Image (cartoon, rainbow, N blue to C red; front, side, top):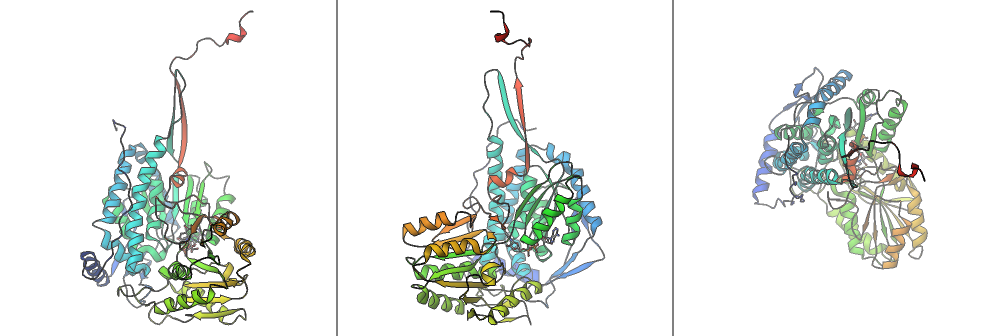
Length: 543
Ligand code: NAD
């Protein structure tokens, strides 16, 4: 039992290392990549503190080198989902009984592990398993992961500190109870830190979790599990299973003790999950919390007063870093005709200069897309544009899967602002541009607002303050993260709480206290020091 009102260490953003030639971090990382590539590893599920292996072993390859075997993972069934739920429920009471400062210590230690002794390993695993270049791995797997852990501890303390006032003779308190059941965390392939944060945030608040990572992220997920273990997370608090998405989703939605889902992934899958939960509402012991961050069709809107080079750079970075596989990636742009010639020249030149290949060669800016399914989907959008009379491919447009799933960064110019790729999420290195008449700024803002169902991120580029102000109000619901003269990617924990509305999710802002509030159920306590002993009120006395 804790005997003190403790202050947690001040959270800070982990500094990004630059991996310059000759730097010690570069040497260590290169060696770790070589070590990992030289081994074939075996990845079990992790349930109730035990490693679980099955006869169904599946292979893992780097997306950029599909003939190189990295390892195997053990695929589970419906039975393993039940096993994991039971393990979580068994751990629930003891985890909830542990004082909050111990929970804080575990995740603060995890932050120091991921940014310290495990930094090279988690980065190397993300580079090999998810085809991230060193910078993309560093900002995600090492830095953002540590930031989530550290800032969430600070937010937890802030939430616990937020107490009601008390009147004379009374003490009012609010305690933040963990939820009465298990949380199911379903994570995407594209960010190692999101994969870690989705189970960790509810666990930090005292909940027990079943975590189902995306199959294409398992190689780095197992490093996260190692870190949780080394940080001292007790058995059963986070259980990691590798099962088919819909199979796990069905067991989750039909379990009476299911109390919440923490999801990041596509809009299509989230809608199915929401429906399955709704269909089973009569079964659940409590109303489950449904938290989901989903797809995006993120925009860059440019006013005639903007600076062409700044816009071109924001598009080159915002659309193509990590092969456009960021929910926040710029994927549609509206450019005024007065700036278009200059923006086009710089952008096309920049994109042509990108080097593409495996992340083991640090000179490559662009790597492979995650798997064959994604490759085929992205290629089909490029082919569609090649055959559509409203479109022209300005740069890129080729793809090749002979060695890995490589797609050239592609810019489509369209004369149809409602063209398919102005509306739908592609989730790959494809940017579509619509050029509008510079004096049709306000009309174009209206078109932008109505074109796509998503509302995750977006940017306005302008020097003219009135133009910024107009976009600020007209696009009020078009993005949960709105950028002024900056690319729409790269949100930092503690600085730009992240999430969107409309078809982009429940906007519960990961990397802020708002998200943590979803994982608790407050109990209000009123204590009366000297309770009355007579039911009669003074107004009832005789005149
Ligand atoms: P996905 O939707 O294909 O898969 C996400 C997870 O859901 C996987 O673990 C998958 O196995 C599981 N799943 C699939 N069907 C299921 C079902 N019926 N029930 C339960 N689980 C099921 O997404 P992905 O390809 O891994 O990730 C890319 C998507 O994630 C993009 O749409 C992207 O925009 C989105 N994303 C959003 C954010 C955000 O913060 N808004 C961040 C990252 C990624």
